[in-house]
Length: 136
Image (tube, rainbow, N blue to C red; front, side):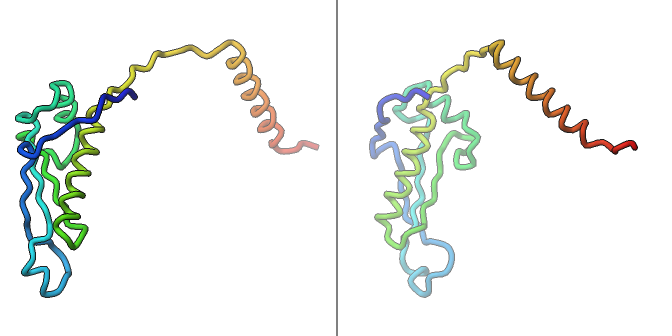
């Protein structure tokens, strides 16, 4: 696959919101907003049009019907690490959409490979035919 140069996203295109994390964590989980919600509007971004189209065509549950990428990061205890994690996941998604799939050119098998294939099939058939009942 061919790739293009790294995509640059400005801070004003990404909306980061601190929220309280889910799950166990004792009394700290109820007080500290360490999880991060990242929102990135694909259509309003400065990405090239072809990358936008491939990104919107991805069958990813993190992309809403309105074309907004929503990533929730809550794996770490600190808000800074969760922000970095969310941005990293967004960057990986964008790099996946930036890759241009190379069109496969269909080829035909060579005559020698066809001959070898048929010879191995014949050999296998002979092996299996020898497994029959022995008549005395």
